[in-house]
Image 1 (spheres, rainbow, N blue to C red):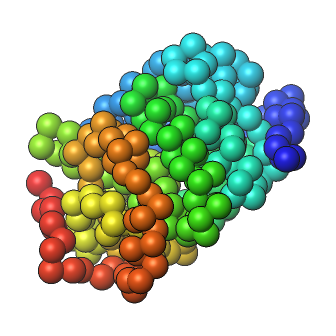
Image 2: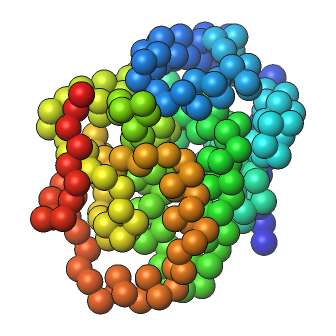
Length: 264
């Protein structure tokens, strides 16, 4: 199977692109103090991410591999599901190598190097989250055989991309889609409009999501250990069969059994 990896070709980045990375990094790292989960902030330090230009994937991978055995590989854009899961299952994180334009500084739909590296990679230095991502990749390979990729994609969306966590009684950000976005970093924690719900695996995997705006529902975990345990201890095959007989839940829906978590 073609792995879709390409050279990062770090030397091709322009001075303007490095400067834009520095601008994005400085803005987000300052904003996330007191908002992001501590393991994410720790990861920025462990991996020596900084406002010193777009990271070189080879150098970044050396530090990341030393921490948890993961590496970062460049891809030209979104890759097929099976390729994506195969990389995760083998502790390889695929990252786009292109950088957004200044006009896209606030939002873009396709993940770029800032979203992938700043948003995702710091948590891969955390041993528990790193194990969760590998377990997710292995689960994705099984889901492709069971026709349930869309179910597992929702789990990724509401955890890895847009997850919240309770840390010392306070809500904190850890999803890459949030921490790499200035607007959603504020919206997810401070705006009264979205629903913040306690994480429940079946609930998450039945819930549709949107890619064109901020989220209506965020799901809150208590720990990364919780995520890893759910992934390793759940037999997903019968779960997929069970959910096949149930309707999907609409974006923003609230169920009687949902645990709504208030802002503090």
